[in-house]
Length: 141
Image 1 (cartoon, rainbow, N blue to C red):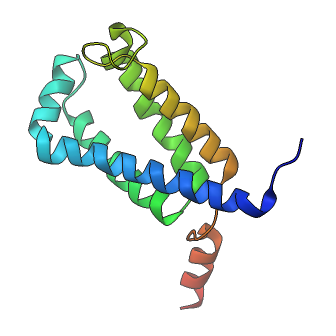
Image 2 (image 1 turned 120 degrees about the vertical axis):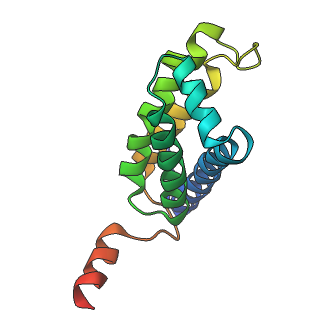
Image 3 (image 1 turned 180 degrees about the horizontal axis):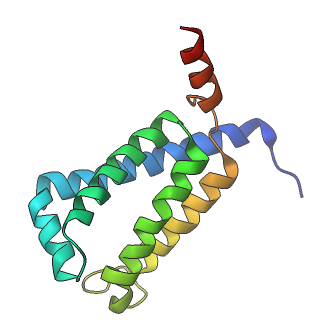
């Protein structure tokens, strides 16, 4: 078996960008459609503290931006997994497997977790803000 190392960095880039946009879209949904207060109310209806809605929105916004930039991609990918795990446990798990079920099953969040693990294994990919380079440049200015 052979991996095409010439395209691996670009594969990681495409995956990273699509994940980042997806997280921004989900944050946008919570901000502009459901509203932060509505999202907090929904979290409360699940038995969760309402403030976790705001934490989730910030994590999705920050995570999306960091993924798009390629900043600390491995760590950001891993840090976002608990959010999706919580959606399975608290929101989608009881709806069955298929996401097309009423209320959405846990198929999509589970797949999203797998993709985040893959991203963390692949790393930043092409055109990424390098963590070490960023901090090194900050020390010299």
